[in-house]
Image (tube, rainbow, N blue to C red; front, side, top):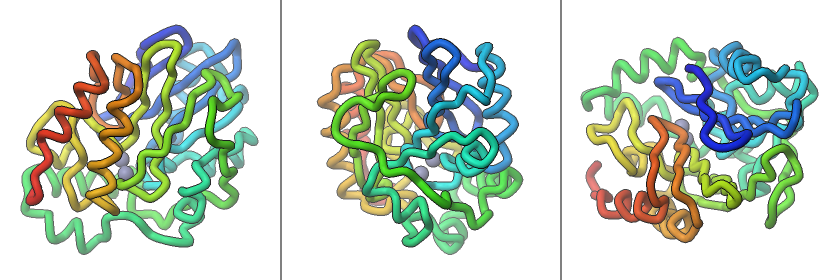
Length: 249
Ligand SMILES: [Zn+2]
Ligand SMILES: [Zn+2]
């Protein structure tokens, strides 16, 4: 999982199970999403691989508080003093005061679907069943660009979770979309721009509506939470995902 520099100071880290993004300004680093609990070493290694030190983490931003995206967040906060910024609408979920996640029952009832069992086994190996939250998430100031390296602009794109947030980098035409728009998933039968299978979404209708929000952003590079980078109009990618929507997936 070698970081790939997508634009000046924008690095995409793609792993089989989940992705994260590093933004740099000099030696300072913003981490957007933090992998599974079992990937904390991978997150640190990815920072070293781009010639930075994890001590330089200025902020950890979260798209949403599912364990595959916040898995190293508390560790980064405890070890490097990095604040973990989440959208105000995602704070309660990050603290595990509410639950907006596929349950073990959801997984079991879909285990017959192609890809779900191998995915679940890998999830367990990466610590994905841990009861895991963030002790003291910092509500990020919205709206407008954040002041951390890369100056990402948070955009609320709810549905997958209530406070799911994507990040726009308007200067380089990049959207970091978390699970609001992905290009594939181990449990999905298709590849290309899409929503996750329906049972992963807290509110499918809102997730579908959020594709319109994503489609309004000026960008031609999509860095999804799962599966590889997508080059091309993000508006068209969001439209493709809308076209693919089917109630029984
Ligand atoms: Zn998720
Ligand atoms: Zn995810």
